[in-house]
Image (cartoon, rainbow, N blue to C red; front, side):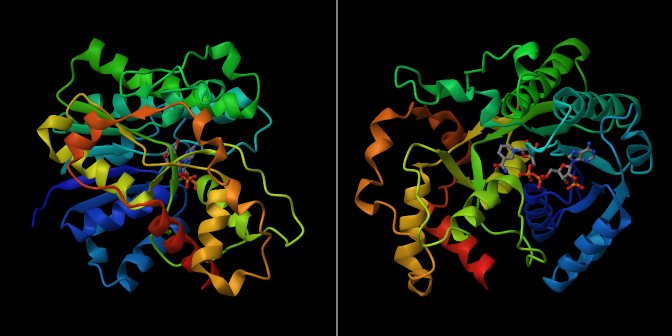
Length: 341
Ligand code: NAP
């Protein structure tokens, strides 16, 4: 057991809730930022209902990470914090002003977090920023088999291109936010070491019971959308992406500050590639009660797209983390079981 205090920005998010749960399970104390007291109270109640010591979780309200000084008060109030995990960032495509709603909060939010540490958290020695595969490769390259994506790769999008459409806006937001963090470390030479966690599509169950199943967070909604298909719907069978389970992503944030080998590293979290058809096949194999409710698609063609996908090499990350990733079957099965419960 340890009494280390860990600060988690965006604690109400899909990944962050699993992270807070694992931190509390490991005996850490957590200070999480949320946008409203309702979200903070709900997290506290969920931890308690899961039999965890919810007294070890406190929350502070940060309504908008993009506002200058956003984290200053919260950090000033918690001189006990020695680890800062910055997960908060907009992850959705439902925007009208791409720069204001995606790029600025991601980049300014990261700056505000790091400047708050500089001004009010000199005791903080470890920072982990949640970045993304989006910072590693841009979507146009995912089907270029001559490319290999690794911890050393960056997407080539310019800031101007990022303003072109919401998908590019998100991809750019992650690239420029991550660069902001590495630049800060280079220029400021702070007391802390930095690691980033760069996940592909994150699947797996929500940390706590789902209250509203109509629309889940962006990556989980992909599985939810398969479950919303009607028997007569067409099923696309092209490459969709690589997946990683949320429990591994949360675990990687913890290794990111616990293990010396993770200092200064980009932890590239990717397991296997998938398409809508592979999700559908998995669901149909393991949930026969959904047989009549879902389309069949073309089950035998599920893997046809595989030769077209750009390979990933994240052996360096796997070696640093030292744990085995949760496989596709378990990730999908646990997600679906929770949604249909
Ligand atoms: P999520 O559930 O939407 O979580 C995002 C969190 O950030 C929420 O707590 C949200 O608060 C908060 N947030 C967003 N904009 C904010 C703002 N302007 N001010 C204050 N808080 C703000 O998404 P997630 O999947 O857990 O994503 C968490 C992190 O992982 C993000 O950095 C995302 O880019 C990264 N990531 C996710 C995936 C994935 O597939 N899920 C893959 C790669 C990287 P509210 O909910 O209150 O708005």
